[in-house]
Image 1: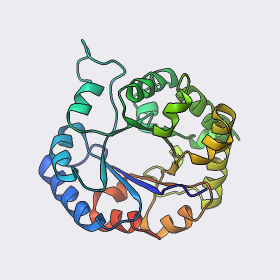
Image 2: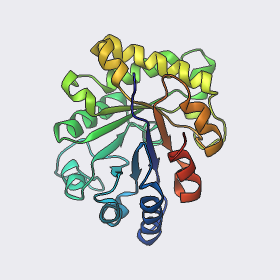
Image 3: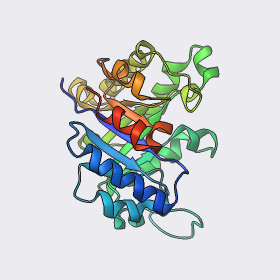
Length: 250
């Protein structure tokens, strides 16, 4: 099955608007002949700035989160309508930092997934286990639960706008990376879970990214694996000279 490699940069809580503009311009210039699918997800305050720079290029605009409601009395939240108004095409949901630091549970993540899809956005649904869960032999079970609960009520027709990102929490920003073999085993398992939910054909088509200390020197080995279809890049996405080599791997 030839799935398109999909490389996404999650800028997290970094960069002022001028810094974001500088990086976005560099990426547009350096990835214009890139062969894969690309996304950048700046912080909310830089979305409009970056939107103007990536518009009409081969780089998609992503948001790092969104509210579970369309509008209303939700101080400090940003709605799907506001994101679409800025030109956002994709939203990252259920990132491990949202789950573990900000205590978002599967039900809340699922509500956001359905709302985003209802409004025509692409969703990158993040799943992954902590070190404690991995050491207790629960990695597969945790990823299965987060996948099943995250996709609850998502119609088969909407699945083509869902990307799953496997990010072992113990490998995010720690410098530890799951070995390509470890990562591929979990990716294969998540694909099997998708197959149980939506059938084998849909499971073969779904893009599953790996996230967790992806760097230029391990990207090729990770991407060589059958079930790894791209990367959700954190730290290395903050500079063109570390993101571009990952984005242009071959």
